[in-house]
Image 1 (spheres, rainbow, N blue to C red):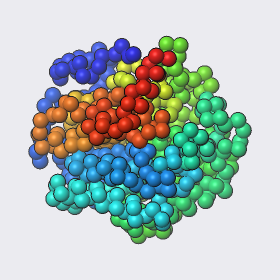
Image 2: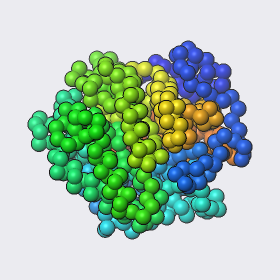
Image 3: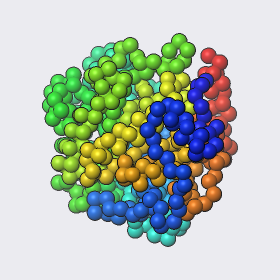
Image 4: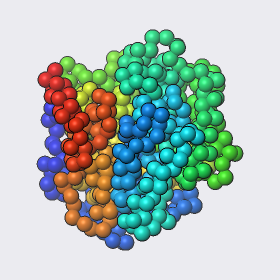
Length: 478
């Protein structure tokens, strides 16, 4: 169990900021959070010619609850309805949606194709209807669809059977996925075909009303791994130009094939070495890790070097892409970097640092990129672990121009109304605040649907909760 101070134990603003000072962290947090139209978080702003009604954004999450052929279910609709009632005015992709079957991260991930298109259109309408019913209008609501191929982390047919299509060999990760030769690599010809699949998916997304698509480049999935493909031969690897060819070809194709489809990119702006549990279950860098394969990492793979991510941002600008959602690392191989939590998933490791360090690292990296590229519109990630102090930090970073929009992921699984409560000055619902128990990760890692089992009454009452308790108990005893 972690020995770090739990956020829930920091009852006052002074206690929270004192903890930041103790850790030597530069993280602003406003003591008083404003509400009403004059709140910094209520500020309307322009994004690529569209008006977004406030500074909250809902981040895309996988639910593991689609049908085996990739359609949304009632559980998916419930989640998107909650996104709609949240009060946030920017929906970054809603859900990670595979552009073809072999790119699904699990056999229940949504899949966009002609057979599923009307079902995905209905899912979008669920969100719009819920938002309109609660807030009267959707005129200032921006809704996109995240398009993905899971690359080396693809499991399209069985939850317990990896079917990797990796960008390059990686000793630390190959071992975990059973990759022993080059047969698990995706070829240049397959990548060229996949470019067409992304373009086709974007045409379909525009047809059913999505205002932008996110060409996913984060968390160790294919687009992200290509960014660090320094050992890959051929036209998609080696040089920075080759490593970004996949994205450039997709963008060019979308521009040619759609009428007015906007494009965003969610990107891991830095990465660290993969981690493994040490003898005491605390995470340590994998001895087989190669720092050259950590995009945005320093020469040791344990720090940040934003030179190439900055170059990537310049490329996005040259391609006419204004919308960027920053994140980092991967939930598969260094979750404490990507998703700071006090309680790790059952198959993970104890955090080797106070999770506040990880939160601050993400927020400051985003702020640095914003300073370097002030005309870009940046959505930040990594805020959930702040818990009760999330609104104060969110207001401070927006007010100071460190980020344009505050992205929320895990938090809205337990507390979907958080943005509206903050913006309207409603009482803070502490019982709904995500405490990063990681059940929303442990459940799908064990083949169950993802949801907030500890705090959401709907998931508390599902039969999977007892199964989840048993898995966590067995993990604690091992």
